[in-house]
Structure formats: C-alpha cells, structure tokens
Length: 309
Image 1 (cartoon, rainbow, N blue to C red):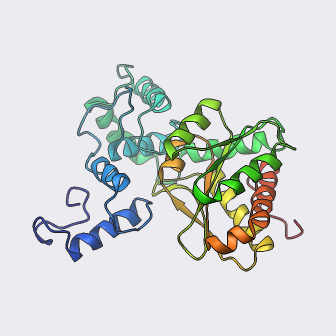
Image 2: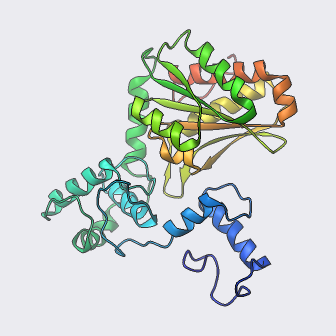
Image 3: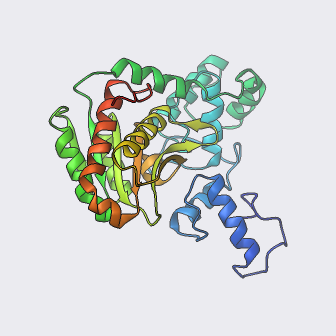
C-alpha cells in the first residue's frame, strides 16, 4: 500500500491489518476502479503489484503473457494524447501498444524496435507537454468507429452470464439473435469470456450477474485517463430502459476496471442486478429492458434514448 502511495510509512501497525490499512485499502480500490469491499482479494493484490511500477522503471515490450502495470498505462496515456492510438488505456502491453511505440519511435527518429526504454521515456518527457490533458486519440477513435458501424446488422454481439442471473443472459442472447444473427452467449469466468469475445472479434459485450446490493449497477470500463465512450453510452442506455420497465428497481451506471471490462477489447458493460429476489421475479422485464437497450444502442451508439422508446 505504501508503494502505491495510499499508506504513509509507519502509520499502520506492523504486520497487522489495522483500521489505517483497511481505510487505505478502500481508498486504493476506489481510486483504481474496483468494488470497494475493503478485502485484499486476488484482483486487488494483483493491481497493488501493478501500481508499484512507474514509467522508466523497466523495459516495456511485447511478450506472452503481456506485461501489465501502471507504467504501461502511463505510456498508453502519453501516446494517446500525442495522437498515437494504442487502444484503450488498460495497462496491458499488447500488439496495439507495441505498434504505437514503433510509430512514436519512427516519428522521433529513434530505433524502431517496439521497446519502450530510456530513449522513448526521455522523448515522451520532451514532447509530453504538447499532448494536452484530454482523453486522447483512443477515445476519439472509439467514437468514430461506433458512428461508422451504426445500423449494421452484421455486428457481433456477446452476452455473458454469471451466477443466478444466467437465464437472463440467455434470454437476451436468444431474443437478440432474431434481429442480429451474429450474437452468441458465453459462460465461464471473466477471463475466459473476455478471451473468447476478443478471439471472436466481438463488437460489443454485455454481461449479466447477480448483485449483493439492493439496486442495479451497470458497469462500464473507466480509469482516470480513459473512459470507454461506447461502454458508457450503452450503460446509460440500459439504465434508462430499466427505469422504464422496472421502475421499482433503482439503477445507475458506474465506471470500473474489473477484469471483464478491462480484458475485453470492445465496448463492454456488466449488468449487476439487484435486489436479486425482485429481479428474479421480474426476470422477463429485466431481459426485455437489456435487449431493448442493446438494440437501440446498435442502431444509434452515441445518441440519448428517446422518451418514446
């Protein structure tokens, strides 16, 4: 926690999970777009390790499995703000980030080896002030792609299912195939579903899971320097349709970086539905709301929902 900057040295009791450590852990989870459980689970521990890396600490290059860390997210943010599209800022050094590093090296007259070493870090520092502080080219490109794909019936749609809400995911997928034949339903853990969706070249992912809360939260991918405009738009659309069809259920959209949203390469949302008893009783209405939102979004990805829908 101290390495990540969320716990001042010597403020916590040594070797104990004290109140100070617990508060620091919650602050870290909140800042890193995780569910604020206050528990150091496997995901939180993994991100704590990633948070220890700063740009320039190590060489960054393409390998399998991909390198991950805050240093990579910093690299992606800098490149994106300078106009080099490395896709979403996910802290994962994949092929698209490697190509952007090569393009930056070419632009700066550096050795084009797709490796972010001291020369690249220095060059980024020299020109970084020209990139501004906005969302960068990656968010702009995502919006442009969404607009160009509107109303296409050959879009590839994935619905994912987790836990006791699996029948809702199945129902959405089944009804969706009537208008969009290239729609499939996936099961398994988050990494398995994300890997399958990426391999299939999906255009959008919609997951459904039970929520322990007394409300529905529609999650989309968001980190401090990047927001998936497509995911946010779809999440807002689902919230609006849930409000229309299940007015007794409170719904909201919220940005997170949980695995299913971070690992997928396309606009993605995770519908965390609660209270579970009520949603299960009204499962058809919930499925109809999600279906209507997805179909509407596929037709007009970045538009607001019409009140008449």
